[in-house]
Structure formats: structure tokens, C-alpha cells
Length: 152
Image (tube, rainbow, N blue to C red; front, side):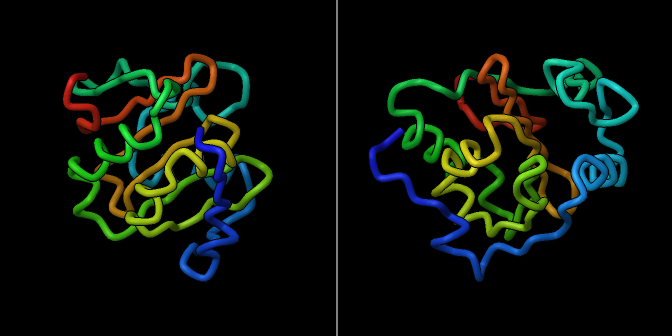
């Protein structure tokens, strides 16, 4: 991580819209609305290494996201992915910060800061539910249903 940590909520607070602070029910409702398959019948902290049952998706991608220079490398991956075609993403932050609607350009430029604020564990979904990804704390893997890293 760079030495110049920017808290995107402080820097861009008027552009980031809080949706619900009712964790984990807000995340369960969101995932169920888009019929995203879960490891359990609902999100339960600490019970599984990930919340989404990735093995139920024939096409999914995965790569380690916590490496030297990761911020800039993965920012470029996001900029070159289909995610750039969306206006906003929905991201959960656990109990501390409400589930929030974040403009994609802010998410892409500050993705690692958001992940840190989420405790390295989060689900990010486009507003239509077509693209989704999960940052997994136990292994520092980013899993998604769309290609982010061109080498994954």
C-alpha cells in the first residue's frame, strides 16, 4: 500500500451513497435478489472461507490481490475490464460502514482503500447484479464472475 492513504469516504463522501447499515441482512438480501449462490443459506461471518459458492459457477476467475505494487496493477486491470462500462457498484463493509453505492471510477481508483476499510473481506456487485466479485480475507484472493486479471 502506498504511504498516502486516502479515505475515499472522506474525500468523495458526497458521491458515495450509503444504502443500508443492517449487516449481514443487507448483504444477504442483495445477494438473494440477484440469485447469487452462497456457501450457506445466508452470509455468516467466519463459517466459510468465502461467502459466494464459486464452485457453482462454471466460469469464474481468481487471483491473489495482496502483492507489491498491487494498487496500480489491479487498478489497470479494472480499467481494462468490463467493469469500466458500469456507472456504479454496490459494496459491503461489514458492521462498521453501511452497504454503499460507489461510482465505478472512484471504486477503480481507490479499490484497495475500500478493501482495507472493509477489513479485506467484501462483496462488490454492479447495480444490475450481472458482475460480482469477492475479496476473500483468509487467502487475499479476488474472485469474480468476469475477467479482471488478463492472466487469470
